[in-house]
Length: 337
Image (cartoon, rainbow, N blue to C red; front, top):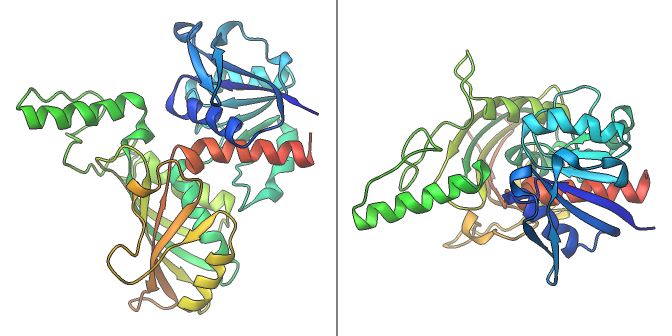
């Protein structure tokens, strides 16, 4: 049986990646429809190597004509349109943050907590986690299965693509402006992003945490284990695609490096690339277009009891967004729809 799929936000970075991923993985769809705002209606987007889809107007789109709707259009649109799509009979897989902490909406990474997926029946909505959370819990899950995790301290190094296409353009234009001694314009970031790092993603909360850091904490608890204590510092870096994380984990019980390596090697979706030599690790420039989550620099942390440190890198537009959503859809059609 083939399914009818709509991609909402099809002209954005993640929406385009969703279309590419659906085609590459040969998702069992009889029909795929690209949907976006009225401003983009009528535009054309690529689907696979040969097909071109004409973008439909979201305000007029009839969701009763589709089985699955992949949303990547932002929290405001998701909050307004996703429930309408669900009421019309579509199962919504939403990439925004709006539904993630709703107790009646499962927050799913298929390799980590597929058992949460049946909960979609309550609202016909499934939430896709934050891009940084996805790659973090992918690396934590196989270790959690060996030894319970007590505490995580993580610093993220997040690419500009996580802030959208216009943010990527700002990195490009600022970099060019520096080289040609042109005027430096800043619209999407609070500080200059070219040749700089900015320890600020999303808005600040009263305790000094940013919402991006808060998301990583609460989403990890919901997906993996509510007992895990997590502290994050999220940083924007002058990279176009690919998020990296420096992770320090404290376990309740002993876990040695070799146990950790074996668990990570065996984990679905994880590639352990860790050689203690020049170039023996993975960087964001090497993961663009890759599906796997890469772990490097695994080592014991001797400053805490039962501690490990490691480095995690992934393409934030692939596994951090589009691929995870498509994998959720694949799981749905295999087992539930």
